[in-house]
Length: 131
Image (cartoon, rainbow, N blue to C red; front, side, top):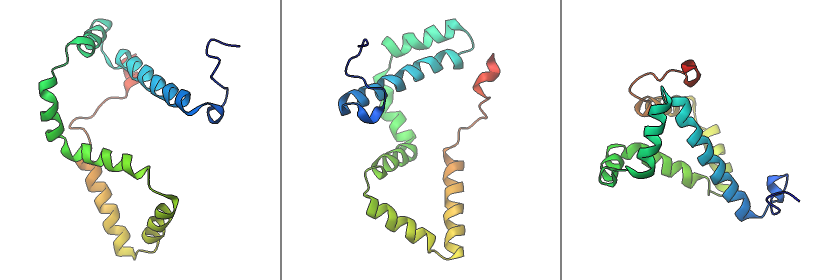
């Protein structure tokens, strides 16, 4: 018996609450580790952690949301699409597959335009180039 007796070797064998908690914990642990990869030095990393822990300016959140309304809308749509039924997903797939060539071209142009609108303003160097 290990430290966490409710944990099973396979995720599908876990109780749902433990699996969700494990996913949330792992996500946050990885994001925390990224701080040290992204910061140019440990002093900056500790400053970022300090800002996260106690220096968050809550007044800027509405401005961030309105400034990035398109991004937040796409995130919400993507999140909600995870809850569509398999029947709806199959119907949408069939509809896209049966579109004429000009429809595929317009869809591709729309996707390219959305990606170009969401991309960051500057080119971000590969994270491991810092080492």
